[in-house]
Length: 137
Image (tube, rainbow, N blue to C red; front, side, top):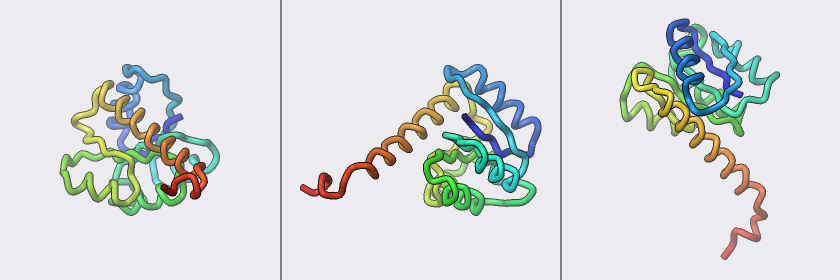
């Protein structure tokens, strides 16, 4: 299950079409604001949240941090029209798993990003299940 938080109809439609063309089989949901997205994610267990940084009720990386804190076992992937390395680094430091520039989204890149993000979440979940005593050398 994937939740996309995106208020732009064109961008949302493009991403939905791109996901359908990808190798994955995704159940796709959409919210048009951060508030709506959070409410939906509290009702439905999503593995991935794709979020734009410019939403009607949230601007910038604060929304990424808020989503990351609320849904710590969900892969947060930032969608942005800006292709800036520092923005990518800042997004990851706020809790994002990955970052996609909207102009570079293809069926292959979005599918790969989603799969890699889910795998990283699974690895973190597995590490937290290992007793501390087993980690000591």
